[in-house]
Length: 242
Image (spheres, rainbow, N blue to C red):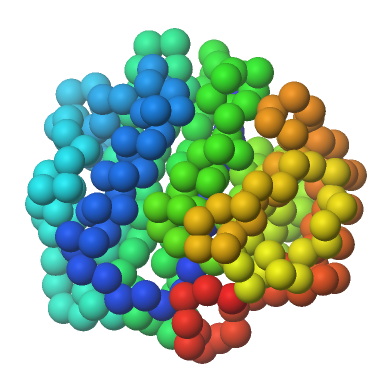
């Protein structure tokens, strides 16, 4: 069964709801450019049924949705959490989730995209282009570190290095902010793509033409961790990126 995650994390960064909505709207537009049949017809997070309310991914609509989903005090500290989903014929089920605007010293901000299916497998074009999706998330949200992984890859890396859920890691692709990129070895077995804000995406699939083994991914993690490129942000957080 297909289960592929693309996600990213960053530390404290206060943002307005409008700023968050602008980032999210830009993300959804860029995703549709990558794979229109998959990333289209977004539903509000509810029961995951086709009858759930549809949401036009425009900035004003996302502002209203984020505000409606987040009520209570101290939102400038705890941040804003919202999600959307899409399920189109012949495509994987997709969920897009954000937690942004938090200025907490201990709870990171995050963005994630999860692709699931019992019919679509990892040979699908959208999965081949998952490293491109990671670059979209990295540039739209100015993340600190991010990765693409399947469940077996995530489990193998977490167990090998005894990682918590929020610890940076390398899957079939990894994104490193500028500070991390400066520490990364330059000869891992993948393609290197520089991104906005000085970041670096390393794609072990080489554009989707290779399928890195668990051993290859473990070795990449070993080297990136030895270089310091995958160190955790110091806690309590004093910045959003490494």
